[in-house]
Length: 251
Ligand code: SF4
Ligand code: FES
Image (cartoon, rainbow, N blue to C red; front, side):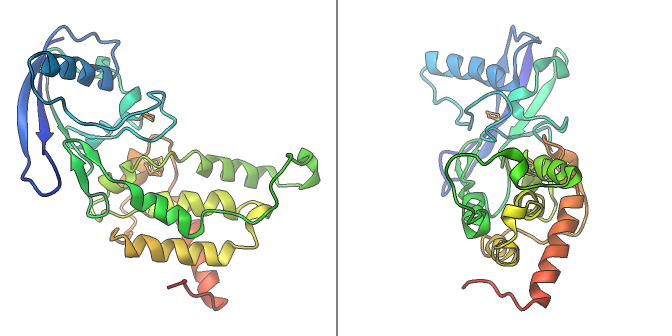
């Protein structure tokens, strides 16, 4: 395939950015989207130009590092990660617009790479348990209802990519935070910190500048792991319970 790419180029956070047009040719339909960008970068390097900066690591849909807006949709809008999006989803001659995640809480580093450490700080605020570590206990020593185990596991598949924030018109991180609250809060081991966890993680997402959730649902529709809106209901349920019990966020 031969493609026209319009890519957001910005040397740094304090410099103005703009869309720059590039042509790429002989792109195989079997390539991933990132491999297509590799082809462009190899050409740019050979020509003595600055390659396009973008985040990536596993390229298998599991690490959460990759993620760009493709034609205005997070990860291209097919509920997969950018690294798992294949060029067979495009047509020969297509023009593809590629931009970084746009959110106040994800400041731009360069080109398509943004700083997502705000997610790490939300996890730091409460995404842990105090159960003793060590050798894994016998699986049946702590019985967990199958329904809860399945829902906790589904929430735990969140890879922290940030597509939910990028897709949300409010720039809300509620789906991410809800996934982190849910996967611990449904398990017996997650109970001791359940109230303080939800209070502190929600307070941290507000401090980071993420927007509020108004139940639009773009987050879940864009999530490569299919995290459901139900997790947000669970977060709100836990939050109300914690507030009623008198829990208050750490300052
Ligand atoms: S909830 Fe989904 S879209 Fe949001 S960070 Fe987790 S995996 Fe990515
Ligand atoms: S590079 Fe790891 S999920 Fe895409």
